Each structure stands twice: as structure tokens, then as C-alpha cells.
Amino acid sequence: MVRTLRIPRLVVAAPSSGSGKTTVATGLMAAFTARGLTVSPHKAGPDYIDPGYHALATGRPSRNLDAYLCGTGLLGPLFAHGAAGADLAVVEGVMGLYDGAAGQGELASTAQLAKALRAPVVLVVDGSSQSRSVAALVHGFASWDPEVRIGGVILNKVGSDRHEELLREALDEAGVDVLGVLRRTPQAATPSRHLGLVPVAEREPDAVAAVAAMAEQVRAGCDLDALWALARSAPPLTDAPWDPAGALAGAGTPPPAGPRPVVAVAGGAAFTFSYAEHAELLTAAGADVVPFDPLRDERLPESTGALVIGGGFPEVYAPELSANAALRAEVAALAAAGAPVAAECAGLLYLARELDGAPMCGVLDASARMTERLTLGYRDAVAVADSVLAPAGTRVSGHEFHRTRLEPGAGADPAWGVVRPGPPRTEGFVQGGVHASYLHVHWAALPTAAARLVARAVRPGAAV
Image (cartoon, rainbow, N blue to C red):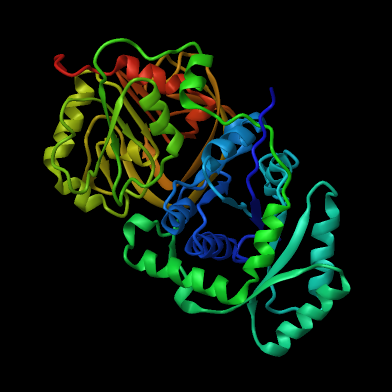
């Protein structure tokens, strides 16, 4: 029997980055939440930062939907999983509507996601420096792919009443509905730095005020009733919701018997990058997931038997992380005892000997420093050595996003062999129970990673 999911939904896209997608998407989420709707937030692509603002706006975790990291077959199931129990789903796109993985057509684009979800698209257009030309721009985006349904436009950065009138006249000639008009409002701006927006965890209560300003800007400038009607026009979906326990069972890795181990997961302002599905998979694999903050907590959670340290901004907090010598010593001792430690990007730097001259945990004999060069993009990789996350030969799709450099970049047993793009290279470290790498991998596409880590975790009462 085929079950259908009837969830009103919108995809918020734009012709290019910088048009105002995050402001509009977050503002819509907050505005509809204020109306009493339960809103499910989602983000196209691998970005970790925007979802923090989504979660603040809705009170629910924002789910990333990335065809490159997870495959096209998981887009619908992951969406259905995240949208369970919601009245409305709002998906923020990535880059321009038709931009995706370099050189691979529509793969990982917002357009591909909108088609997979059969969702109407709201196009956010930067109206500054144009008037009648806006109609040609929107017509091009609406006609490029007939399977992508542009349901209307929200005009952003409109300068005056007269400017708005000219833009509306042009779009009326083109037969495109204008669903909102936003003026410049500095109070709704969110600060940026070397990797994009400053994460929510680093700027509360300013982030709360910013989201409230976005909500007010959208409420005042957009036709929420028309947007709600557009969302409700989306047809039913037939994708079965993704389920972490089902994903593990399907991979042949049911939870082991015995006491549940404690898997400590780094958080706080320095380690804000994570996908919600990772903790769900660890829990389904039989672990008790306990968060901790390396900036504040001087000890690991009681009975910690495994450690997960995701991405973030340790370079911003290097002095504070270094000053917490007690916790650094506990992390080093846990790794030395052979307990599983999975570290991505920021976690890799935290395990290094030093970061910009500040002592870190010293688990890895490597030194890290900030650079001016941005390393960014999707990667295809293969596991070089057996590790707590994957057996040798496992193929994965991942993403790199950092401005740091590690010397050396790989250990005697590298974590991954990156096979594309560019010439083949190795990176990261497999060392005892440690798996540390720059590569971000979405475990929904590799559920066995959670199962392997939990299986290796030290159980409560056992000697570490």
C-alpha cells in the first residue's frame, strides 16, 4: 500500500547568491510559526550555518537535503522524515536556482530538489539597479526548465515606492505573481566572516533579534495568505520517511546487545556544524548521545566511551580551547586508550598538536594554521584504511569547507583517498580508534559509520 504525504511546502530560491534567500526563508519560517503553524525547516546543499537560523525561527531542527552527499533517492525520504508532524515545510535553496555541483548538470541544485519534492518555487529577486529588465530575468528562470514551477516572486532590496511600481508593472506584463516586496532594513542583517554567516550559537541574543526582524520584514512585505495558498497547491508525495533504525537494519547493522555506551558529541560556539541525522543514527545504533562544550566543560561526560567532534570554528576560539587544558588531556587520554573518536574539519584541528600556535589536544602529530585560501567543494573519496567509521575501500561523497592548512595533511594511514576533483590525493588520519579528516560526510548515506562507532565504543563500567 502506497502512503501519501500531504505537506504544504515551498522552495525559496534566487537567481544568484546574495539575493536574500536566507532573509526571506528564515523570515517566512518565523512569520508562519508566529501564525501558529508548525513549520519544518530545510536547507538545500551542505551548509550548516543557515539551518541554525531556521531552527531558531521554528523550534525544530533544520534538515539538509543534498543530492550529492546523500544521493537523489534520499531527498524525498529525508524530507518526509523532517517534515513529519508539520503543517508547512519551507526549503531554503543554495546558490542560484540552477547552480549545482560543478560540471555535473543539475546535480545538487535547488532546481533538482524542487522537482524531486514537487514543490513550487518562490524566486527571491534582487530588484536593485533594474526595473523592466526584471521581467526578462524572471522569464528566463521560469522557462529554462518546464518541470520547475515558479509560483511567484518576492522582490528584495527595493529602493522606493516608484521603484516598486516599475518592477510590479514589468512582472505583471510577464504574467508572474509578485508575492512580496522587501525594502532594505539593516536591523535584519546578519554578520558574516570567512566561512559565511556567523552561527547562531555565537551571537545570541543578537541572532534572536535578527530572526525577529526578518519575520517582521516578511510579515509586513509579503502576502502570507497567497504564499500559504501556493504551498498548499503542492501535490502529495509518496516517499516513505527515512528512519534511522530502518536505515541501520537495511545496512545489516542492528544495535548490539548490552549496556548502551555514551557517545559524547562536541557542541557549543566552537563546534556548531552537525547534521541532525547523525545523533539520530547513533541513538538508533544503541548509544546514549550526550553533548558537551569544549569551551566550557572541563571534563568529558560521565562514562564517555566514544567521541564525535564535528565542524565549526576552532580557529576563532583557539585561545579559549587551548586554555581548557583539563579537557584537552581527557580527550587525549580517551584517544590513547583506543576509544573511537570521529573528527571532521574543526574536530581534526582540535585533535592536532597546535592551531595557530595555541596547543590543542595533541592526539595527532600535526600543526594547523589559518590561511587566506578557501578550500570549498564536493569530493568523491574512498577509505584508504579500515577505521571506526568505514572499512577500507568504502566509497563516499563528501564536502570540504575551510580556510586552514594542516601539516602534514595526511598520516601514515590516511583517512581518505580523494579521487575527484583534481589529481588523486590522500588526506586525514586513521590512528588507533581515531578517524580525523577535513571531509564532511552525511551519515544518512553511510549509516554503517554510526553502527561501527557504537560497536567499538567502551561500555559503561568497562575499563577505558
